[in-house]
Amino acid sequence: MVVAHSNVHVDSCSSEADGRTGSNLSDNGVPRESTARFFCAKMIVLSVILMSFAIFAVLYSIKAEIAQIAYYKIKYRGGSVDVALCMGERAHNLYPYNFRLAVWLANTAFRKRLDEQGDEMPARIESMKRWCDTGLELNSHDRWMRMLKTGLMERKSAETAAEYWNEYVNKAFWDPRNHLMLVELYTRAGKLEKAEESLKWAEGAPGYGIVKNFLEDARKKAGNADN
Image (cartoon, rainbow, N blue to C red):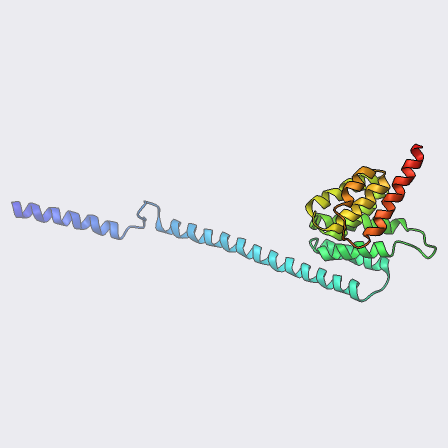
């Protein structure tokens, strides 16, 4: 009787084991087919995302290359200034991060701002402002673009322009050329005390003597006016 009972128990355990082995359930109780489908779906989604990024990168690089080619064409092939400015706008729309393009367009508008009679053309002045601001958004530390912006601001207020340039001087303090320009700006704004203070840091800069004489003349005129 004991032997018979033992055989029954063994057969029962074997049946349970065979049932688990042939089951469609995974270890966590989820059907194996569903798990496989879920894994495939995740891989498909991941593949689509990676493919989208790859396509975006390729298209972006193509746009950047076309914009760079356009930049070299308008810079080195010459032609009408207005056409160059128009092509520059298109190149910028394709790739808005080309700082050198903004510098070239601002400089071109600045150099070609006068008509044949020597009068300034409003459209060119607006182009100067537009590309100067664009360039400074890309690189606010560029000295030439800062100078251009200062000159544009001085058309409205010499004092405001001087304070704007002074912000740059504080960042590039050890260049005497920056202080020399600040002396000129403060002098034209009538801020002679500030001009004198800046003059001591401008010694050694090209044109130092000329600017110093300019300041001295302004002091004499101010003294005569007081008298």
